[in-house]
Structure formats: structure tokens, C-alpha cells
Image 1: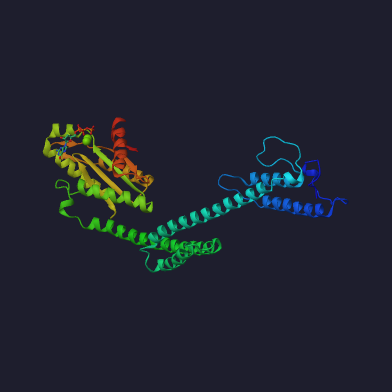
Image 2: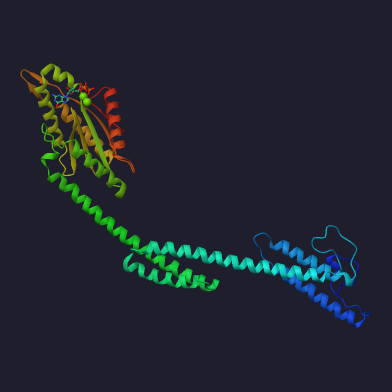
Length: 368
Ligand code: GH3
Ligand code: MG
Ligand code: MG
């Protein structure tokens, strides 16, 4: 007991009954000690509110405790004043402080719970939308979400916590199941696309062929490029594009005539068909005296070897025109399709490499 002491420092607060105090003073001292102890206990269990920290409440409680015990200044009093006698302690102030703080705490808890319920509702609605269309697999989640909905309408935090955990576990199971389904679907798609790639070679339709060379035309080439790009993106399957252009072909036309020029184009086309014999190799006339080869499921290093062979094979061609032998060479640009690349950018890379091969003297290949 310390309400009558002059020294207001907390260290001096510990209570020791004054042996000579009158009986009612002793009783009053016990009441004040208890009240101060309650204030301190309340302060110790304070928690952060939206605009008031737990520390601030704790400090105020301590100040009120000091005020009750020894008549020290009240919270909010600007400067320390003389210690107040017992009859001037601010008991209504203590009551007001306690009542207001408890009301604020109560409102805070109500607001927090209602915010929790609201966010829970939003989450439930979103999840419900996500689960729709999952068939039987989604039934478990659906049931759990219904239960969560029930507790979200004012259930205790503990009940909500339990239901949230169950829903999360159920969703985890569904996600796992979906991932497996997707994997299986992708595998199916992969074999379909592969089969499609093979069939394409077999089904050489007239509409896909270039009339002069009987190679695939530009339209068929564009389709195949798109497929190769998709295979790279979906399954990381490599493919390499060879773009080739006859060297000084204008001079061939000028010197031997357009018909002889056409024969040369056919010879080169046949040479390409002989060189790239795999069912999945795709050879096309890109336009004019330019050709393109797509080596399906072939990476750059192996494509480079094949391209070197082609250069040698074209060099060895012997196209006879009357008494003359027409010498033919080609320049090549090669590029392996990269991840997330568009068809246009793939073709551009091969084309730039071809341009570089021309620039460096022709009858050679460059990789882009
Ligand atoms: P470079 O080595 O730089 O490629 O020189 P180039 O002479 O081959 O290239 P250029 O682009 O100057 O000439 C291409 C020629 O190809 C011009 C065009 O008349 C000819 N050409 C394009 N299509 C055909 C065709 O179907 N038949 C014939 N005979 N010639 C064609
Ligand atoms: Mg050209
Ligand atoms: Mg040319």
C-alpha cells in the first residue's frame, strides 16, 4: 500500500501497510492497491488498436495506477503537480478511462471480425467460381466451401480457422489432380501433333505444292513453321530452319535464258529432296530462287552438318545447257527455333544469316 506516500517514483510504490493508520484508512488503502493492481494488469494485457498502440495503453494504465496509489499526475496532465490528497484523486477519470478503452477494444474486435467475415466471403465466392467446371473432382471442395460459408456467417474465429484449413487441404488435392489431368492432356496433344507432322509428309496435296519444282509451296511452309514453333513452345522440341538462295542466279537467266534458269531451279529442288530424305524433313520453295528446309526435331549442330552436305551436293551438280555446263552454288542461313519465338522472328534470323553468307562471299553457310 502506498497511496499516502510522498515519493511518486514507481520503485517506491510497493505496498506495506502503515501500522498506525486508522482502520478505515487501511481498508481504503487495500481498495486503492487492488484498483491500481487491476489497472496494471489491464495494461499488461493491452493490445494494439487501429490508432492506439498497446504500449500507449500500458503507459496510461501505469500513470492511472500511480495516481490512485500516491496521487501523482493523471494521464494528460501536462506537468507534474503536487501530490494530491486522497479526497482529490480523480476516481471518475479512472472509470471513464477504463470504460472508454474497453469500448474501443470491443469495437475494434467487432470491426476486425466483420472484416475477416467479409474477406472470407469474397474468398469463398472466388473459389466457388474457380471450382465450377472441375466435375467430380471439385465436389469435395464444393462441400467444404459450403461449410466454410456457414461458419463465415458469424462463426467463431476458431471454427473459421478449422474450416479454412480443411478447404485449403481440399483445394490442394484438387490442384494436384488438375495438374495430373493437364499433363495427360498435353501428352495426348503431343502425340497427336507428332502424328500430324508425319501425315503431312504423306498427304502431299496439290494445293500445297509448287508447280515448277513439286516441292511444298510457301503456304505449306508457313503452316509447318507455325507447327515447329508450337512444338518448341509446348514440348521444348528443337527444329532448325535452313534458308537458301541460289548464287548469281540472275546471271544464269541472263546468260542461258529463262527456260535454262527453270531447269536449274528444278535440279536444285531435286538435289534438296535427295539430301533431306527423312519423313519429317520439310523442303519448300520459299519464292523465286529461294528455298527453305525445316529439319523437324533436329538441333543446330546436326542441321549444320546436313547443310554442309547440301552445299557440297549443289556444288557437284552438273546442269548442261547446249555445249555449256552451268555451275551452281547456293548460300545458306540456318537458325534453330528458340523458346517463345514467333515464326516471323525465326525466319528473319535465318534470313539475316543467309544475307551474311552472301556478304562473306557466297557458297557457304552462316548460323543465326
Ligand atoms: P545473289 O547471289 O545475291 O542471290 O544474286 P542473284 O542474281 O541470285 O539475285 P537476284 O535477286 O539479283 O536475282 C534473282 C533472280 O532470280 C532474278 C529473277 O529473275 C530470278 N528468278 C526468280 N524466280 C525465277 C523463276 O521462277 N525462274 C527463273 N528462271 N528465274 C527466276
Ligand atoms: Mg534471292
Ligand atoms: Mg540469288
